[in-house]
Image 1: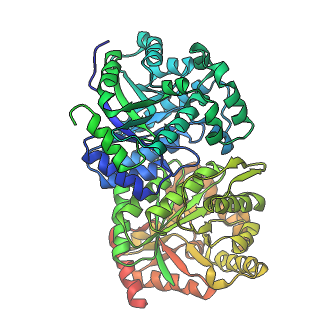
Image 2: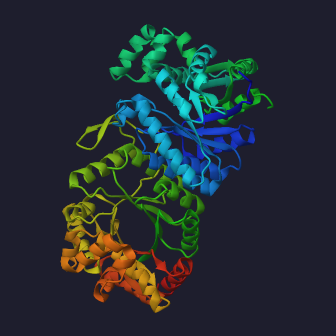
Image 3: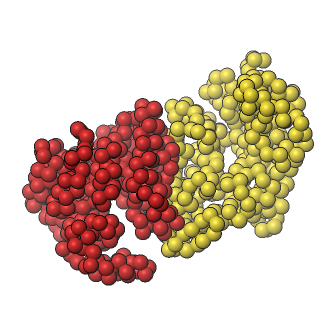
Length: 307
Length: 314
C-alpha cells in the first residue's frame, strides 16, 4: 500500500476541567500537532461543549469529536452539535462514530446490544452525513471499529479508526477493509499511548489500565482470532462481577496489553511510525495517558517526525 | 424584577450571538435558549457558544426532556456548561409527564453532580454503579419549564425556579400553585425564581401587530386544555385557530385571532408599554420577564430599545 502522510493527534479524555483540557489543546496546537480528539463517554464532560471551548481558544488545529455513540445520542443531536460548531469556528471538526465503551454505556443504562448494532451505527451515519451536507458542513466521519462486522461497515465512512496498535492486528484489519475501501478512504488508529523521554510509573500504570479496558472490551471475534480469549477470561469474569478495572488489570497479561497500546521511548517511535506508514496508516491518535500533562504531550511532540 | 432575553434554537447562530452580546452590553439578566422542534442546531452546543461569547450574563436552556436524552448526558452537558460559564448556566427541564419522572430526574442530576455512585432503576431511568468522573464544580440551578398543575407544585417543592408561559390569567394562578409547593416544603420564597416567557413584540407600525398575532396563534395552538381553562379561555375560542393552523398554517390562523385573545396571550406595544406590561407581572411575584421572540419588525433594534427603556424604568 502507498505510504501516506500521517496526521498526528492527541486524544483527550474529557474528565478534567474544561480549562485544563483547553490548555492542553492550546499546547498541542503550539507544538504542531495536527489534531486533538475530544472523547465522549457517559462519565465524562459533554464533548460538543468542550470542543466549542477548545475551538474558541485555538486557530487551526483540527478537532475530532468522539467516539460518539449513536446508542447514546440521536443522529439529530450529533449533527446538531456539529452544525453550530462549524458555523462558529469553521470547518475544523471531524467526528468518529461507533458503539462506544460497552461497560460505561451499561452503567448509564444504555442498551448496548440492539439487534444488528453495526446497522444501527451505519443508519445513524447516513442521517448525520445528510444533515451535515444540507447545512454545508464538510465534516469527515470516521468509524471507530475493532471487530470484523464493524470493520466491514467502515467502507461507508470516510475512514476507520482502529482500536489497536500492533502492526499484526492492524494488518489483519486492513486486509478486511482494503478490498472494499473507496479511493481516499483513511486508515487510522486510536490507541492508549505512552511515548516518553523520562519514564513515569504513574503514566505507565494508567496506560496498563487504559489498554486493559480496550482489550477487555474487544469483540470476541478479535480476541479469538488472536488467541487472547482464554487468557482474558479471569479478568472478564471479575469485571462482570462488578470489580473495578483498577483491580482487574493484574489479570490482563502484558503481552496482550501491548497489542492495544503505543508504548515506547521517544527514540524508538519513528521506526514504529514508519512501519505503520508502510501499512497505509494516515492518522494516529495518541490516546490516554499521553495527555496526562503538558509535559507528556511535549515528549510526544518532540518524538514525532518534523518536530 | 429583571429582564431576560429569549432566543429560539431555530434562529440563525449569528443572530443568536448578536442578540446575546446586545443583551450583555445592556446588562440583561439571562439569555434563555428555547429548544425548537425540528431545529438543525443542538441547544447545549448553542448555549456553549453563547457562554463563550459572553462573560457576565446568565445563560439557560428551555427545556430539555429527560425522555429525549440519557440522564447522564443531561448531567454532563449541564456540568460542562456551568464550568464554562463559571456558574452562569441554568438548566430548564420538562418531560410533560407525571411527577415521579421529573422528581427522579432532578434528584438523579443532583446526585450525579455531587459525585455519588448511583444504582437506580425506574420505568424511565436505569443507572448501574454509574458515577461521573468529572467534577461538577458549580451547582447548576434546575428550572422547571412546566404547565401541568402537579408539576407546577413539584417545581415549588424541588426546583430552583420555574419558567411559566401561557395567558396572563394563567400565570397568576400558576404562581399560586408553585407557591403551594414552596410552602409544602417550607422553602423560602426568596430562594426561588419565577420566570415568565410570553410572546413580546415592539410595535412600530400597526402592521407589526401581525407578528404578535402569528406568535399567539402558534402558542395557542399548542396550549393544553388545562391551561386554557385556568386562563378562562373557552375551548370554542381556540378550536377554530387550531383548525386554521392545520389547514392554512400560521398565516391563516393569525388572521382570526380576536383582540381579547391577543391581549391575553401576548405583550405588545411601544417599548414603554411592553416594559410596563412586563413589570406589571411583578405583582404576582414574578422575578424575571423574558423579552421575545418575535421581538419586533427589526429584532436587534427592538431588543436594544427594550433594554434601554427597562434601565430607565429601573
